[in-house]
Image (cartoon, rainbow, N blue to C red; front, top):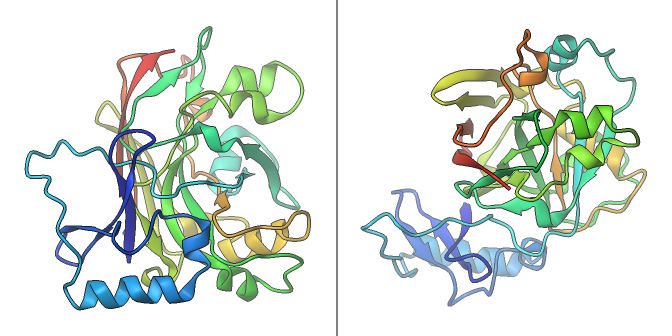
Length: 287
């Protein structure tokens, strides 16, 4: 299933995109797309049955003006994996990590897939990163195997891990200062349930800036694959339904390019996609 949330900021309603590309209203069945729903197999079953039976009402958006919000509400935590692609580590001159690098993004960085992204005040090194986001569907603690890790995944989404490299690398401390500026985690458009993604290590990722292709990678390049990432993270913290893991970005970020590095500015347009998971488009403006 392709689950999403539509409507104005703070007033999104749950929806489903059916196999014909028609937007269907889920608000008669569930109150939101969140961790509680993802952990409730009976509720998910009712959605599947209603969709298969043609019982879900159509949401009218003939004008194409309906905002698509983040596909997941009430996110608990966003765990991010740094330097998780062989080609990205190479372009930044970093050694291949022996273990996954973990940092966090606050849930309040999340915006819709087509919402505005704000360049922070004083920023000269705002960068792009297309990523595969993993959404947890079952409580995960001290998992034993990568296969068990995959069994705890509810679904997948497109994430844009926007980053400010000076704040991240040159201002001391941890990476978090360059990762948690407002609007720095567009998510969506859909949460695609895991049954529709048979192999999360076979997904193409692309990102364009002002129409120019900058990133063109594949999750096959991940150093630590999805199942192993979930297993590993569960050794250090409990993952709950509705938690998100951003699994890293392939080569092609501004930081890895020759001087003058083409960092983002107000007025730039970024478009990105992950195979089968939808497409995002953001215009950048000054904060």
